Each structure stands twice: as structure tokens, then as C-alpha cells.
Image (cartoon, rainbow, N blue to C red; front, side, top):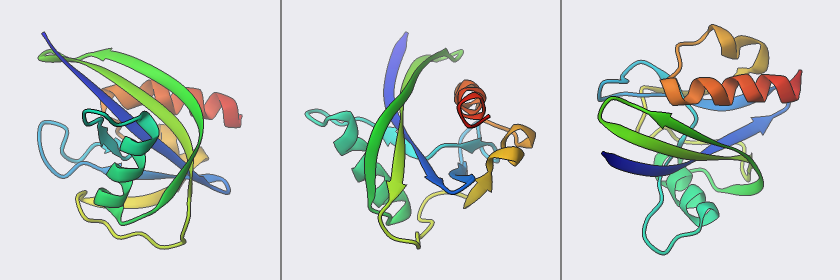
Length: 129
């Protein structure tokens, strides 16, 4: 079974977090935390900064490890390392997703999430509780 290892940014601003809606593949229309695959030789932090710059043209600081999620999809196993991050500028540019926006913590549970991100939302809401 194929194994994919990725990083995800939980970019928080006040009482909101930055989320992205997938544009393509079987998860199109579902929400996720932006991020992507770790390339050979990269640390998690480097991969996260590169991915968010590529997807959103947004420089970030990676502040703190949050959680690692392991999720078994039908065709692959995913390991997702999530980090609390800070945007280093107020504006971003959506270069890859259907939609990207800051969403209030109170509204997260009503959104349709990619399966692996559901546990991240639950943990985030516990911490922000």
C-alpha cells in the first residue's frame, strides 16, 4: 500500500483559521488545511513554508507542532503533520484551490472536511474550547 507523508498549516488569526477547498480529485469541493507533500531533504517546517508559498503566495512562520494524523484511505495510507502557523503578511493569493478563506472556529464543524482533516478540526476545537 502506498504511503504519503504531508504537512498542514493551521494558520490562525484571532478566532479564525485559514482553510482551503479542494478543486480537483475525489475530494473536490471538500475543505482541508493547506499544505502538501514533504520533498526529499526537507524538514517539516521547510516543506510547509514552501507549500504555503506555492499555493497561497503567503509567507508563514511555523510556530508549534500541533498533531500528527494517520489515516487509511482505500488506496493509500496518509501521515499528516499539522503545525500552528502565523501569516507574515495580511493578504494571500489563491493559486490552487476553489476557495481559500479564514473561517471562525465556531463554523468549522458545519463544513464538509476531507476525512483525514476531521480529527484535526476536533482537536483544534478542543484546544480553542
